[in-house]
Length: 384
Image 1 (cartoon, rainbow, N blue to C red):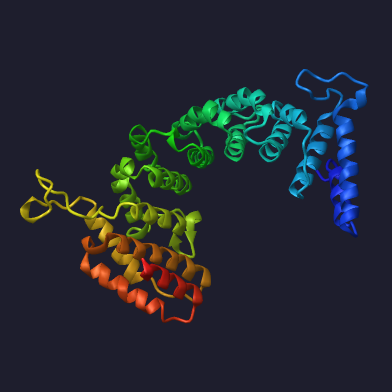
Image 2 (cartoon, rainbow, N blue to C red; image 1 turned 180 degrees about the vertical axis):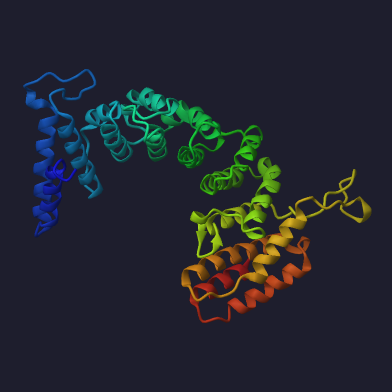
C-alpha cells in the first residue's frame, strides 16, 4: 500500500518541508498544472463521453484525485477533475469507488451541474446491497459510501431524487446496523436542509418500529434523527414517548447494555442524553390525561402508563449520581444528571414535588463547587 501511494506521499512531504508560504503555493500550482495536463491527455488522446481520460490507469487516476483532495483540504481552490471523480464512483472496484466517493463529498456541492450525471450511479449503489467487486467481506460498503456522500453534498436535486431510497434503506430489515446508522444520520441531514421532506404522522409509526431495535448504535442514530424531526414538528411525534421511556428505563434501571457501549460502567451515556433531550420537548408528558371534558381534576384524571417508570428513572439519576475519581466517568454521569434536571425544570409545577425539590438542592450544590464547568451549567439551568 505504501509503495502504491509513493507519489502522493512525496507530494505531501514536499508541502510539509516548504520553508515559506510562497514555496508551498508554487508547489501546489505546479502540481495542479501537472494534474490538469494528465486529465486532459495533453490534447493527444480522445476523452471519454463523460470527460474522463481513458489512458489513465487505475493507480494514476486514484493518485491524482487523492492529490486534488489533499490540496482542497489545505484550502486551495480545486475547480477541475470532476469527470475523473465521477469515473471512480462509477467503478465496480472497491478501491476506486472509495476514492471516488470521498472526493465527491469534498469537491462537489449540491448545485454543481456534474451531480445530475451521477445520481443514477448513487441510486444503484443505494438499492443494490453487496460489495461492488463481489467480495463477501464487505457487503455494505457501497451503500455506506453513497449515504455519506448524499449527507455531505445535500443538494436540492440530490434530496428530491434520493430521499425515498434513503428512507427505504433505513426501514429495511435487511439493512445492516452500520448502514441503518448511516441512513438515519443521512436522513437527518436531508431533513435539516428540507424540513418538510418527511410527513410526521405517516413516519412516526416507522420510527416506533426502529426504536425497538436492540442495537444501541442504531438506537443512538435513530434518536438523533428523532430529535431533529420532533424539534420541527413536535406534536406529530408525541406518541413515541412510551418507547423512549422504555429504552431509558432499560438503560438506567436494568443496566441493559452491551459491553462495547459501557462508558466507565455507565450504560451508553450519549443515548441517555438524547433520550432525555427528546422528553424535554414535551413538558406536559407526565400530566394526567383528562376525562371526557378534558379536565385533569378529581376522579376524571388518569395517570399515563409510562409516568411511573419515567419518574423512577429520573429519581435514580438524581439520587445515584455522584462524583467519581475518574474525570471521564464523572463528566459522563453529570452530563446525564444535568439533562435530567433540565427535564424536571421543563415539567414545572406539573412534575413531582420530590423531584423538583431534589433538583433545586442539586443546583444549589452545583453553583457552590469550585469546578467552573459544573458551576456554569448549574447557573444556566437555574436561569431557565
